[in-house]
Length: 328
Image 1 (cartoon, rainbow, N blue to C red):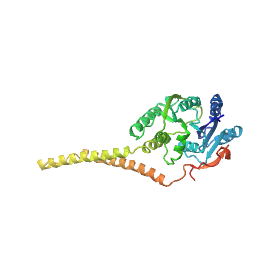
Image 2: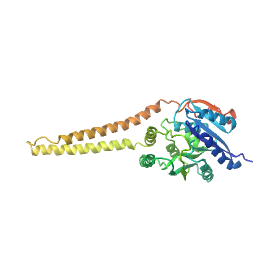
Image 3: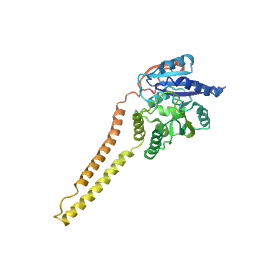
């Protein structure tokens, strides 16, 4: 008799001690409903939590051998926590889900059904986003549509990191060690058969969001600049257009001066506005170029994507040694 498939649940955690017990309870209930179809492991990635999350996770691992914990030496960020989950998970199929319970674990069985139909990636599409303010909803819609326009690959709209990945996809992603990580784009870039399922995103169960406006802006830049050079092309086209307009205006002034040599000099206000406008465009273009160069600078240093302080719940038989794809 064939042994059941192993399902890995990867959960990035950053200061979520108020949510962890309820997340664990609901997730274990969902896994219990799967019966003997799947063995499972729940892999928590503690992204340098500043509350009691680390202690709580160790206690869970002590009571449940299917709970494993990878603790970072400091806060490296959500995308790097997911990357560590991909590195350490052993499952034939893997589900990435945030630990704040906005993405309901009860959707996992439907994802597994789609996977059993032959899909290698199953991503959740947020039909409704409860508990989020209008500013967040509007900016999210703008971002997903902007990246769809600018990106060179087709990235699903309104889909976050809540998704199922087949082992073949995981192995592909483990080879991609770029520092400027936008995993939703990397998954789309990897290809394979992908399908989305709609779901309703819940309110945060407890605590406050750790995804600040500053992090949102940086994440948006990572998503756009990592998968498109169109901002550079746009700045080049704009520079060409301004040069053409400037040439036409200079020609017009020259012809006017020839036809009317005694014409008084006028138009200082418009001249200053034109200079300021062109200077602004130049600064924006240099800024865009600087963003690309800055990302290249970080890539060539080849630093590790994250640093693990300790692991809990692993042993030699279950993959406790550092995965081969993890940076030294």
